[in-house]
Length: 443
Image (tube, helix red, strand yellow):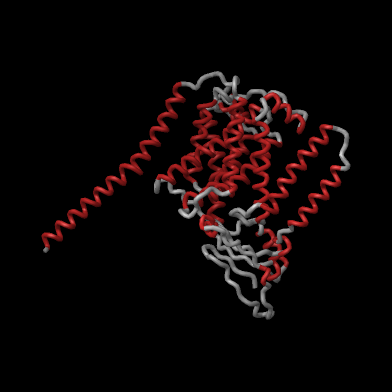
């Protein structure tokens, strides 16, 4: 009988199949490798035992992958055309293929094992590939970068029309209908994804409100940030964002309350049960509630502030890259970036949470490290390509607002982590002194 994995258990229990009198094969269970050093011991906190349904798919296959790669080189390299552009494209695809295949078979497993650990190794390899693309763009000027995208799609390389959503703010059916575009669906789906990544309702609401203030602050640079007041606070925050956050948090609650118990397909007698087990392979193997606790310690406070700022930067990069590289919102490149960012953020956020909550964890995980590199490089591209485009200075009221936000955060941190512990320590000393005086009197 396959091992039963329950939440919070360190190892999976094993037993014999009494009805058939057969013992379980030793190779049917693959466990997490023992950490090579003390600093890696925290991996046990979120790593699960892997009980493969089909043992073949959990073997390394490194030699087979290497032979497959070499065979591909032989076939395509010796059948290449004389066209320089086609050969360059094929060479670039082959380079990224090598990175993806290498990551698939050689990278370490991440915090997730469903649907398969190799899937998340592939996600990490995609993150590495994306970083290489960003580095290449960073060393171009914006005109060359825009021209490079035309090789992927000849329709690109054309300046986008500027669209403002604040031209008519009268509340009528026609004006509301005119505001219904692809961004309405993107808001709902996007906030559902953010809820699944962050697993914290309060942080999601803070992000939702802060992003609207960012749109107010940056509408002099990006005209599509200019919206009517009811578009900001009713259509966005209270309708689409709320709907996405609500569905996302309900999904998190479902996974958190579920009891996780897994059996191999071979141990399920009915075909319906086998099919259900197959679909269940695409659901989480276990679920961890996130309790970020920004008020518990100064480290957690800085971590949550950094997490919020980082998430807002991911959002802003999407809009600035679209505007600077002339990529239409519904284009597949924008959609692909959003999907891959979601996949990057899932394991990366889990690793960040482990880093902030587990004192044994002394370094960021691989997914988190690569995601930070991706987002920071995107930001550098935006800063470089923005030179000479946004000449209008920030309005004074915008500067004043964000200065007040920073001051409020500093005052809160000083009071919560500096003044409060000091006052509590003095109160404890005073209570101890009173207790000693009473002991002396009693003697």
